[in-house]
Image (tube, rainbow, N blue to C red; front, side, top):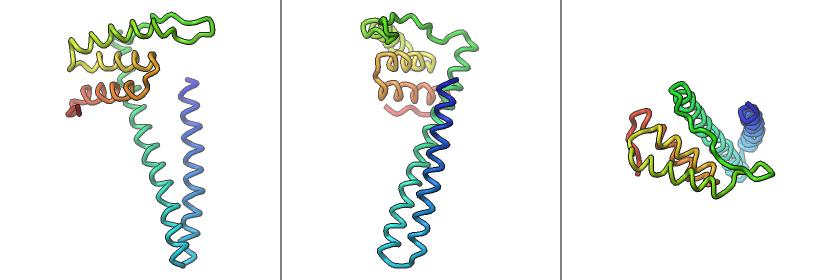
Length: 150
């Protein structure tokens, strides 16, 4: 729950920031000179890109949460079997062992979104966020019966 609250607060702060920056871009456009118009357009592009990125990220998170809820209802969420250090961090060797099992499971059933979901969790536990995101995107695509990009 704490992660959801943090995400919502961060998203709200970003939206406020985008509105403030966008209003400055509009003010620059209203000046009417070529230089301020160029700066105004440049300033308006940044919030547009930020809003697009925030929207795509929010879609990704909600789809991943939907898959997690469905997998939880089936009783298929991965169990936390990782050993942790005294400080509470995940032990790297433990994460690598779980990752190897998840990868083998996914190689045996490459069309099963559940395997890809569990692999994404294993990647995340192994601190490989880019691959975790790609694995989760594949799980979402397989779940939604969309073509999967290689």
